[in-house]
Length: 114
Length: 88
Image (tube, rainbow over the protein chains, first blue to last red):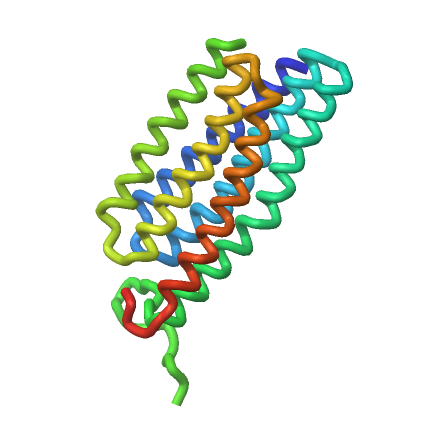
């Protein structure tokens, strides 16, 4: 149980690190949002799964099982909430006139449509 | 196992500092929002890890749950408030 918990926590830290590399290195707002919106969700799911496994392995009583269920509840809430927040923020940025980045500087579409 | 949790917490603090760089130097206001939001999600993991280090996980898991609700509401409010033409 403990080895599986360590593997899950290390996987979550790896996905957090890839998200941070993406947020520092990508060229514009939309690609940064792509990096954080995915790496954040998967990282926090893996990390909370590993921590609840470790908690189940350390004390297997009624209170410990309740704490593990709460940890998984945080993970499920985050799985629903973080893509919603990403979508809302990206919609707000696109409606306030921010265009996606291209290599030669031309816009990818005419907006607003004539 | 506590030393492992402490090492993971220190790595996450380092990642929070890097993502707050984007929150400080971001060219648009939306870059600042996602920099601060990404730091907040890692602070949620650090709260649970600190609960395991102090052996008070039954208290810290409630704090972490409330913090996740607060972060979700704050991101939605930011997205609603900054949505206007030419706000970048």
